[in-house]
Each structure stands twice: as C-alpha cells, then as structure tokens.
Image (cartoon, rainbow, N blue to C red; front, top):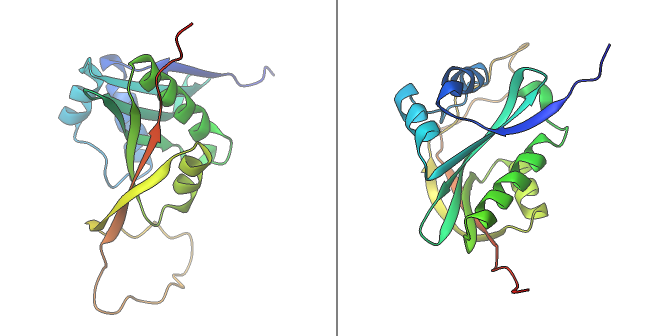
Length: 175
C-alpha cells in the first residue's frame, strides 16, 4: 500500500462543503455560518490554506490581510490527526503568507485554556500582548465516551479569557 501523502493548498469557494464538514465533524463551537464561510473563501483579502491527506481535508487555517498586519482567524486540525505536526505546518504556511503580503505583524487571539495552541504559538515566537477578560462563552460539553467524572460547576458556566498574541514579521533585508 502506498504511503499517505499530505498536500498543502489554498482553498477556494469550491471547498465550502469540505471546510464546513470539517468544522461540523469536530463540533467547532465558533464555526462560521455557511454564508460567512463562503464569504471568507471568496475574499481576496483572505488566505484559507488546507492540508489534505490523500483526498481528505484534515486541517485548515484562515488568515486575513489587514493594512499593516495579518490576523490568524482560524486554525483547525481534525481530532484523529492532532499531535502529528499539522498545526505547526499550517502555522508556518500562514506566517509565510503574511510575510508575502508584507505584513509587519501576525496577530491572533486564543482561548486562555487552550494550552496546546498556546504552546504552538509560543514555540513559533508569538508573544502575549494582552488579555480580554471573560471574552469567550463557555465551551459546550464534550461528547462523553463513558461516565462523566467531572465535578459539576458551582454557580453556572464561566466565560473564558482570550489571550492576544502577535509575532513580529519584520521587513525583508535589502539585498
């Protein structure tokens, strides 16, 4: 059997159903509406980059071009593919895209409790610029594979902080 191949490519309007299915399959609570996702895929100021393993989309990232900066707006790796370096590969492609646009910085925000993502961003050189207190609504309960051993929350659900992070991209050195 031939080994699996991983391809990075820019996604477009034809990929709407595939991206929406990836989001839905992973219960992404901040997933976009179909109309918003379609607008993102068609927007010239956006780059939506996907990683496909053989023919199946397994990860994607969306980055927006701003006047002087770029902003990572989304990054998602299918649960069975996590821990294989796909997010790192996508982030490197996003950084390359932002540099290609001549962006001075790459901005992002991330849930304060998303330790794997924060570790990825810090390893890539991102620094914390600030925090939005109570920015994100609580995550929905994850599907259970067995009895719930999590103690119940007292006093209702708590909103989560957003960390604001950035990576200085600098300007290319003249040759």
